Image (cartoon, rainbow, N blue to C red; front, side, top):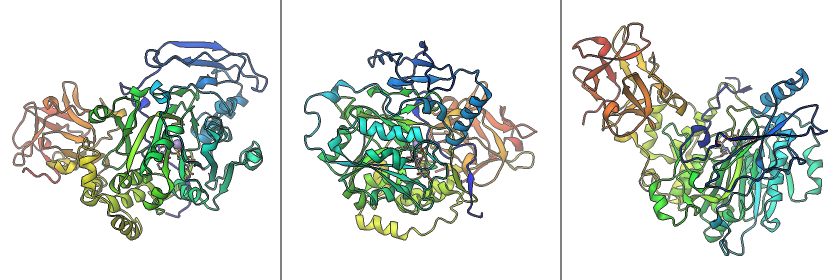
Length: 574
Ligand code: LR7
Ligand code: MN
């Protein structure tokens, strides 16, 4: 509670997994064919044997990545750099430190050129003559960082300079959010001294990425602002299709397709136009990815055309400066990380703009499995940001989120000026947004019940309790002492008889009561709650718990057996 800075828990709060990690079927995954290439040891590599591997992508959809010439640097054309397992203790220690400091393989990044080449994966549609308007506006590129590895940050900058038409780049503004990890390489100011377009702004206290972005905006001049995370690589032709949309209509906010750069090998994985995903969110107000809805595929003539997206991931986008200011930029009450992506997405749509993902524009991003930097101790920063978001933009739907967090809103500060902003802009309602922009989203207010599901047997103190991330699909539903704080004990019963959270349903499989993707076909996902007998029935049998209160079972229904009786919070039979 002392406001000091601490390492975050092992898990990144709300880390938005890349679709590749979710193994969605429409994403191109590397095939099993791996082409090994032994590479000569380079003098600059400290007595190391390194191999470059190329995990080939689906050649039917994209012309294969050309083989990298062997005399070049490691990782050219976006290839993987694989370190062999047997290292000296000295090098092992360096590799470990790189992982610890950055949550990605910094050692590998340091071996790769800061100018490395990447494949050009654009769809032919993107290269047709007169595809883009002639006089594109100029953009500043704002890159905020807190303790970013030097090679990764510098590579981000060069990827912009090397692969954008110079006349379209005003300045590249690096905003150092009060890093305390010193770079051992050349100081940025010295390194970029010969690059007049690169400007370095240093915050004088830790601001968090949201206020750091605002600091960058205040230090910029161009008509368009383009934001990138500090561990990105832009591919050929990434910028023109973004600026084109803004030139045609300055209320269009645009995101590139975010390809994934492997955290270990730095391999660049690209998605084809078929693999493009759009952004959504779950009712704990975290960003997630989902497939392009059918109505969007019908609206467009080519899969390479811009696609409407309900939300943006947050880090990579271009926006017209005037429109951004009209929208009130970001809520500067947001700290460190999280929530700003949904704030900007909601208000873009609700206040007269559109949000698009541009399949012709590809930028890679290193997806990490944990957050390497320090967070404020004793404060749930993400919760605070998200409650501010809900208070201002969600109208009556904020209640769904509050139930999900057991109404623990905490101290979220003053949001009155943000509410005034919204009313002065005369923005549309959140209901309008849900109905028109994100009709696919399941809205729990249509539910028969939401909250805990508490068993009355053996003391009556345990509740159904499970996380529902994709990793938990196929796991058995768990039990835990009821805590009344929502979270993993928040369930809803849909009017069609599902017990679900987000896209995951409780399923009465022959192997046990498991968490599976909702299929909407009733069957094993159909449950009926009887308020009088308090039984929850599926397939004619009853949901129950065992005597040691650590397993959920299905058994023949017996009246008045407490371990088959449940209290379903907020149940409403109408
Ligand atoms: O205190 C901080 N100060 C900073 O300047 C914390 C972070 N940062 C910088 C950091 O160096 C990085 O450049 O802010 C950037 C984002 O932080 P990451 O890379 O640790 O976060 P992320 O990539 O997991 O976060 C995604 O969600 C965030 C929510 O606040 C931001 O919107 C990030 O920009 C966003 N990243 C992307 O959209 C890239 C694709 C990821 C996905 C999905
Ligand atoms: Mn990032």
